[in-house]
Length: 234
Figure (cartoon, rainbow, N blue to C red):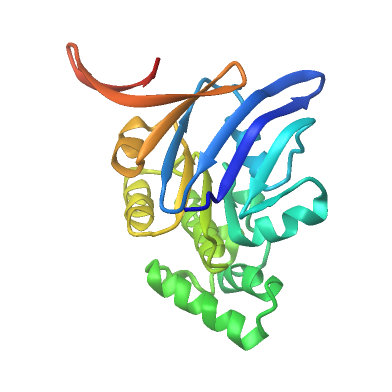
């Protein structure tokens, strides 16, 4: 089975600081990788690197069977891998929900009627049809998050790159988002501090530390209260 992403000894620098250092990663179809680590460890940088928003200074990045180096190499990657930003306001820019969800399919070359039909279908699949004509910046934080996901799914990506998907969501919206994600077939890389969410969604885990990815497994520890921990594997 060919990997969707295959990174070998990738190095990414920002502002003179090495963020990712000789990092290697393989993501296969159907995998759901939990990506954890301290704040500032470079998790968001890694997601951005996968779609070419950050560019390696060294190493090899292969996506969907081809090495990617230049900006034009990543145009196909961004059609096939959807990045959900931490802040939904960075993702939504059209006046209404239906326009925002239809924007991606239009960019893929669908005719306007077909793009709108794809958007309608995606909203229906996520039980978001009542939001179709709402003004995007009038939505609640949870609604914006779900609409941002709908905009990605309307493009029928093969991979979802999710940066803190439940960030700032209330319990009901977080539960709804998890329901949606658990029912999808796409491979995922999930960055989150919500270990319980990752335990339910992920098929494997990795800790990003000192610019490197370390395989990790999730353990449950019973103290005065029960809680989950990610442990890097030896």
